[in-house]
Length: 289
Image (cartoon, rainbow, N blue to C red; front, side, top):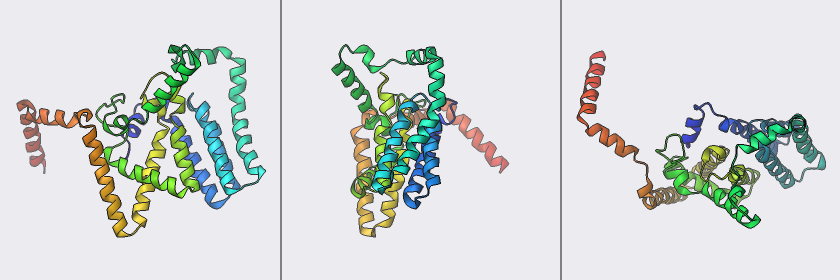
């Protein structure tokens, strides 16, 4: 499992993870359309984006951006105007009920937006507000947050992704940059824009607002592993050693910030009370066996 966040938030009963379901549906159908060219797949991908608008307030920004990525996919395939109309028309049609509701209940939008603290709230000028937004955006790419110690997570004892997943993810990114296929365009583009809505809120590193990153990083990790399995053995060994050294260097660079979960476990096992309790439970298990 590449991401502890995926496990934690899927069991916490909050709505931050809801867009991920629609993103996965869009990815599957859009990439299947790129491979097979069936219009029903394109309609389904567009429908996932349209319905995803109502999953989370951040989706009002994310889903139209993913629609633009779909249009870029169509451009790469050299599709005709009808394909573009399917994407734009489906998304617009799904957005109509929401637009009507907002138009008839303007106080709802003010109430919802009032709960957020935009990055521009503490800035007096346009330039400084944009710099604040960029600073928040950059915080989501902090290696310490992603792989070492996600202190703003519910657990606080690990990164957003497990440390071992950073190597195949990095290989997947390099492969995507080199090959520039439909899959690579969607995965890289989707990953880059995923923290954009969260960057508009003045809360750096709040990964719960950028959980849309999860499927893209996980799929890029699989993309990297797929490449390692398809190349010659010498190249595979070289990539493995390079990935291993990457993980080791990352852990060494952030050693002071590594979570103390293992230290807590060692401290607990040293305590006499915990040791005696553990021994009694082991004896009970042995008797049952």
